[in-house]
Image (cartoon, rainbow, N blue to C red; front, side, top):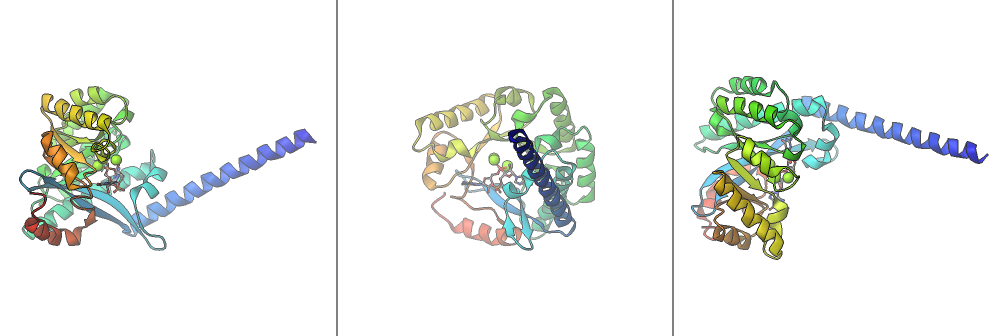
Length: 284
Ligand code: C2E
Ligand code: MG
Ligand code: MG
Ligand code: MG
């Protein structure tokens, strides 16, 4: 009897995991249909030079305007398509959409470089440079130098030589790279040396507590020094207050992005935010 019960339990577990698979499958299907129905949106978060007040770029961050569940952050849907072909399609949509957005702003007199997040899976596709070239050719008004690619999850990159070749091919097209979330994962130093990225982004987890946690401040200081010695520029993400900004400036990190400057916003409201930013004194 006990054995049977055990068997039943095992069976029950089995059914549950089948359900979980079915649910994941349903979610992937609804993401695919959301993409077709144009339910995805890019929000943009400005990046500023704290010393001059200049806007140096804006990061495109994907959102899903879900018909029933409202505006969803990437953490609510990207994990379901991780390592799935669909993440490549979503990635292409993001690049094309941001190229179009650059051009739209440009026509209204605003020239802001756009950064797009690229997963480890995307950048490891051998045909990524070809697909990127195709996307750039679909929006010929936007020069490739207007596009920066932020490479995510660098610790997941399995073949550093292959990835650096892929990245070099993209650099030849005229785009540039940043290493995102620098300091997390394990192999950051090798990546810094080998990957053709001009910019490193200090992960927000270190920036957030740098004012109260001496170890985090030490890491931030170290990353800035490392960037300098490798001749890369450095930007701090997760700058939540003016005090963070002041501290970063004292450490010679001029570039910043974070809620303390601006939250990610809809493309339509960015021009207005820019006008307000120009009149703001406290960050200058
Ligand atoms: P990330 O690229 O490191 O982007 C920064 C994230 O931190 C964004 O969250 C942003 O809203 C948030 N953030 C910015 N400033 C602050 C701050 O001062 N404090 C705090 N607490 N958070 C701040 P979001 O938009 O939810 O995106 C999360 C992650 O999702 C991104 O991290 C990126 O890894 C991924 N992601 C976003 N858009 C895309 C995309 O189009 N493609 C891919 N593959 N991944 C994306
Ligand atoms: Mg990013
Ligand atoms: Mg980041
Ligand atoms: Mg992140």
